[in-house]
Image (cartoon, rainbow, N blue to C red; front, side, top):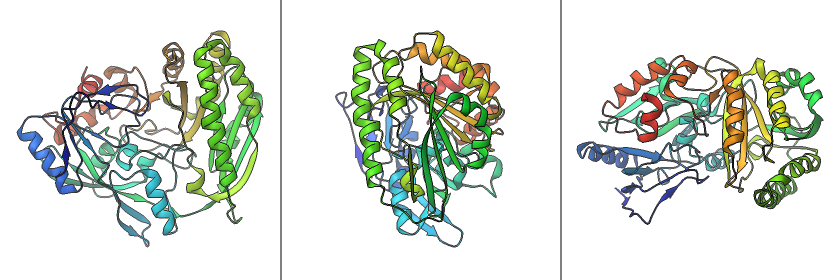
Length: 437
């Protein structure tokens, strides 16, 4: 077993630097057997464990002063079933790496988010999603998963044969044990027609549900203090793939280097945020191209930011957008990042924000180091009015009582959790307070 003991000078920071912690021990297992030995040893010593994939959650899900297990060395494809179109992969595999490996064999994941640096286990455990009302989150692509439980034993849950426990275990925030492998559905690698356009907010409101239904993948960005909306769509195409190197280079420059410059200015001069938000809406490029799905889903995100995201009932989206715009126009929030809106199909996963309802996910961003709390608090109040459910990996202020009301199977999940981990080995202070306070 490979392990690394860290001292107080080696502090763990998540990607956004919204929290940090100093683990007493870091472990880097290279096999499932390694993970089992770590868990068995920790149980004997009455220690707690948290697991980190890519550290891309904004909430302190993995903060610990005890044992931190990194999945960075538990990676790779175990098997690819061409006939049944599934792939079994070790849990620490990053989504971008999995996409590249699948592409070699002519496959891809059916949907991805706009960031692909997360580990497979981290993405499914937090309910990470892409967009498209006929698609669920990445978690819904899971056919089975294998977990190392608190006693060191392996438990494999299948969608078809362990239905109840399976639906409780997929989105689990790592509170049931350590996910070590996952079997996911895959699809023959499709070519998509990608379009980026600008519309006016009034047009968006009028055509919104038509666009949601007509396009396989649809998302849009609201610019604070502007009537311009940036719309992105992706649909299957018979057209051959194009060289999108120029598109990728442009996106990298605009969405990273230029955004970094603008963000630095807005941080120093907060009142300039309104000007730069409007300028950004004007600068949005209109693009049309054809490329494999996995080359279009995700883009690099090098500018550090903080994020809050809520899933709301899709049918209430026009009302919610109107409330958001009113709040932005009547209050002096110094925000220049656009508000991202995506759609996700209803599912049966107990802790999924899309549980039993088609959902619109609304994401609010602020540049790292700026005063984001007043803005997030105001937007969260609007989300609360419409029974919004928080993305588990994004910032929120929900209490146990509120979460229990928002998630009909919340108490069932707690019962399942106690079956897997009766001594709370896989909890930290943040999670203990979140689910039991």
